[in-house]
Amino acid sequence: MRFCILGAGKSGVAAAILATTINNIHNKNIHNKNCNIKVPIRDCVLVIEQQDKTGFNKEIELFDLLGITYDFGLDSQSYANARETLPHYDVLIISPGVPSDAPFILTANELGVPVYSELEFASQYITNPIIAITGTNGKTTTTVLINYILTNSNVPSVSAGNIGVPLSDIATEILSNKININNKTNINKNTVIVLEVSSYQLEFIKTFKPDVAVVLNITPDHLKYHKTMENYILSKLKIATNQTENDILILNADDVNINCKDLESFKQKNNIKSQIYLFSLSPVKRGIYVADGTIINSLSHNNEEEIMKSEEIKIPGIHNQYNSMAASIVAKIWQLSNENIRDGLRKFDGVEHRLEFVSTINNVDYINDSKATNVNATWYALNSYERPIIWIAGGRGDNNDYTMLDKLVLKNVKHIITFGEEKDAIVLHYNNVADCTKVDNLFSAVKNAYMIAKPNDIVLFSPACKSFDMFLNFEQRGKCFKDIVHQLIAMLN
Image (cartoon, rainbow, N blue to C red; front, side, top):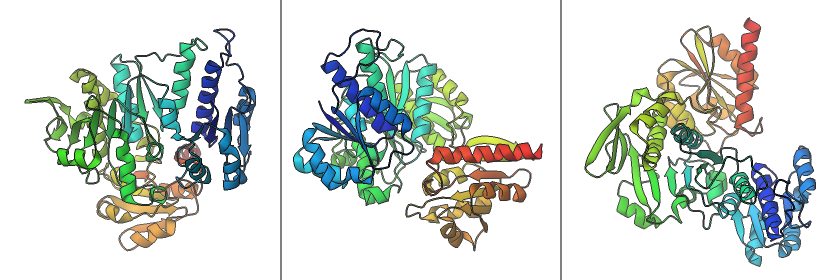
């Protein structure tokens, strides 16, 4: 097989390694069960990246080692290059975020070359049970939480996907273990793969079929890519496209965009065949819900049981009640006890960059919520605390509408500090209802927050914006915030 791969990020590199492994197996180029992968015939795997080679030294070194051909630079993804290149390849594999109207995708469609997302490609080589989680917000938290509960209940599991470990990496480990190239892997045929999947990854699936799929919520996001909200909703619901009557789909019954109150109508409209379980802050049949501060399991017909008090969940906020209910349904599907579920929800600390406690300075808590890359995520953050909030926000907007935050800002926010490309828009929206300060960078934002804050306040860094105006990603942005807070502590000491 000859594989053409768009993108040299994590997903693209992982797909290239998987493609190389597949060709090694097919070409029988394994000379010793304890050896490294032997280099296949050159040009069987091609990676195309529109950025120049700067910053890709490690990737290029790996490509050279494995015999992977590569082409960097803006011209590499042109129509001319697509028409010249694609006739020589059997499949086009695309990294998340490559638009459907990219020259290589359009040319592949014209030539009849199959187009797979990295998720779709990798899933073809995996037979393990898969739990797939999507949604606008809460994907990472719920993925890690499910993996945490399963692992602590002695169910072998691993988290992967959009969380930072491409599914292709897991597929490579599984294939390598089958042919005894790598005996160090802990993944076996019974390992449950807990997979965070994005709308980008779901856009190009054809056969991907998780055993259990979870849709946490759907609110406006990535509309520059998907063009319309309807397209975005459809991309999320694709997670269940290939599921059968033997598979399970878990849905948020309270989400207006999922719109599943009438299950039969929902299933007909979206051509869903799966068994459906629901989670909600109101009573539901066949699901888990919260009533009077208690988490109730109603998965079994005519039988309800209390699991725990919702206030016992360690991670704060209503959104984490939703995430915890979704995780609890998965745990019940795996026949875990209420004790296992309670233990997990009481101990789980959350994930980095999502309402992450950083430090306390002069009785003021500093919270890193850099993962809040859209307005809806920040709504959950602002709704998670009853103490006065100094809100640090800003970055690159995505047609942001801040109206949904207005009531929470009036109720909970004492001061807004904003920076980045969106700072003027945020101040314009709020300067008549809250004290606002515009600054040039994140360091100045934290410094100003420190000067304004009084004991019992919370400094909440929840940007409500993408990070790409000043940072590579939200992880780098969150790390920068934490570093600045720790620098501040060092200066005060």
